[in-house]
Length: 572
Ligand SMILES: Cc1cc2nc3c(=O)[nH]c(=O)nc-3n(C[C@H](O)[C@H](O)[C@H](O)COP(=O)(O)OP(=O)(O)OC[C@H]3O[C@@H](n4cnc5c(N)ncnc54)[C@H](O)[C@@H]3O)c2cc1C
Ligand code: SF4
Image (cartoon, rainbow, N blue to C red; front, top):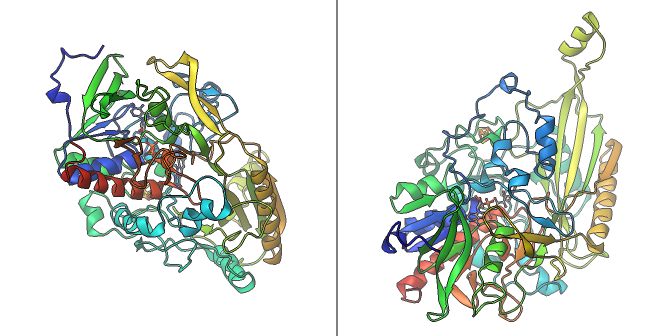
C-alpha cells in the first residue's frame, strides 16, 4: 500500500523521473535539469558524494589494514565480485556484497554491480571509443539480430556533445571503424607500444595500434574546471574515486551539475520495484519504490520516465511492471523483453617479451592503459568463419628484476635491486557476441530479494561463434607478435563466465518493427512511449567497443527528444 499519508501526491510529482544515478542516469539528470525540468533521480544504493565519500583516495599502500589485499573471508563471502580485477581493498566498498543482492544463475554469469550514487561510473576503466556504422549496420549486413533503427550520423553530434563535457583524451586517428571525437590530448604510447604500432602500419593493411581513448582530463577545458574538476595527475588509482575529478564519473560531473540547478532531487536508498501503468490513461504515470532501509512502499509520479538502472536491472524493472494491459512486462507486446542479451568476450589474452628498445623505459603511469587495436576483422567483407570481430588492448612495460629470495643480506640486496628487466608485452581480446533469443533474463517464479522483488534469473552463454573468434584472435595476435620479433609468446584463454566483461547489453532492444523489438529510434517503448530506456538494455547489438560512451550519447539525445515531445504537448 502506498504511503498516501506521509506526503501529498503533489510533493511526489515531478516533471521527469530517472531510475538510476550511474553513468547513463547521471546524464539524464543533467540534461533534464539543464532544460529546466524538475527531476527526481531514484537510486537504490547509498549516496556517495564526490571527494567526501572516497575514504581510500589518499591512502598510502602501507595505510591499508591488509596492504591492499582483500582479506580471505571477504573474498570467500563474495565469490562473484571477487573475480572482478578492480575488487581490491581500496575499492571493495563500491561493489555490492554478493549475499545481499541474490540472483539466479541458470547458467554461470558474473553479474558485477555497484549500487550507489554514480553506479559503476566510479569503478570503470574509462575506455571511451565511439561506435561506427560498421557496428550500427552490422545486424542488417550480417543477418543477425534486427536492424538498428539508427545509424552513426544520428548519434555523431551527441557523441561530440557528451565528449566535450565529460572530457575524453585521444588522437584523431582518421579510422572509419573508430570515428574520431572531440579530444583532449592523448596519453602517448610508450617506446615499445609505438614500435608495435609502426610495425603494424608497415606490414599489415588496416591494422593499427592507437593510443586508447579514455575519459581523463589530460588538459582540462573551462567546462571541466566549471565542474570543479582538475587535470588528471596520472596516479591510476581511479577506482578509489579521484580527488582531482581527473576522470569522468557521474559523482564528479553530471550529478553535482544537476544538483547545482536546484531542480534535481536525488533520493538514495530507493529501490524501484516497478513502473506504474494506468490502463485508462494508456500510459505510465509513475514508479513504485521500496525504501531500501525502511522497506516502505512509496509512489512517485511524472509524465516521463527514464530507465537507467544498468542493462539487467532495467530488464528486471520492466519485467516486474505488470498490468492488465501488459501482463508479461511493460511494453512487451513483441515478447522480446529479456531476450537477445549479449555481452563482450574477454576470455583470451597473449603475453610475450621484447629484447629490443633497452635504451628506453617508461616514466610515470598511463591512465589510458596503453594502446588499443581497433577491430580489423570482417569490416569491409566477411573474411572469417565467424560473424563480427574483436578489438584488443595492447600494452608494454618494463618490470624490475626484484626477487624476494634469500635471507639476511642477500634478501636485502635482492629487494633493493633497481635493475630494470626487459620489456613485457601483452594484449587482451574484446570480442563482439551475437544476440540470441536463447540468451535471456527472466523473473524467477518463486525467489524474491530482500525487498520482496522477484530475483532475476540469468541464462546467458557463449556459443560457437565466440569460440571461433577466440581462436582467430590467438592466431592473429601470435602471428603479429612473431613478426614483430617478440619472444616467449604465451597465448592463453580462460573459462570465465559471461558478465565479467561488465558490458552486458540487450533485453530491451531498439528496432524499427514493434513486432520484433521493444524500443523505437528515440529509445521509447513502442507500446508505452512516455517510458525511455537508454542504458545497455537498449542495445540491439554489442559492437566490440566499450559501450558506456554510447549510453551517455544515447541518453542525452533521448532527453532532448523527450523534452521536445513535452513542448509539443505529447507527454502531458
Ligand atoms: C571494473 C569496471 C571496468 C569497466 N570499464 C569500462 C570501460 O573501460 N569502458 C566502458 O565503456 N565501460 C566500462 N565498464 C562498464 C561501465 O561501468 C558500465 O557500462 C556503465 O556504468 C553502465 O552505465 P549505467 O548507467 O547503465 O549503469 P550504472 O553506472 O551501473 O548505474 C546504474 C545505477 O542504477 C542503480 N539501480 C539499479 N537498479 C535500481 C533500481 N531497481 N532502483 C533504483 N536504482 C537502481 C544502481 O544502483 C546504479 O547506481 C566497466 C565497469 C567496471 C565495474
Ligand atoms: S589517474 Fe587521473 S583520474 Fe585516475 S586517480 Fe589519478 S589523477 Fe585521478
